[in-house]
Amino acid sequence: MAQQPSKKTVRRDSGTGQFVTKRYAETHPKTTETEKVRVPVNPKPK
Image (cartoon, rainbow, N blue to C red; front, side, top):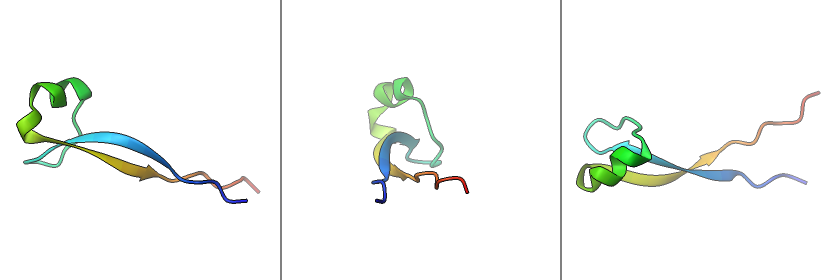
């Protein structure tokens, strides 16, 4: 049975696209974006 891919919340600066910390995003809400991205599941080792 295949596993469901999990999601992770990330925060980015709107101008540069760089990842930022949660604290920075909370203090600069107008210039940051919060989004959920899919995290790939590692396949089983052979």
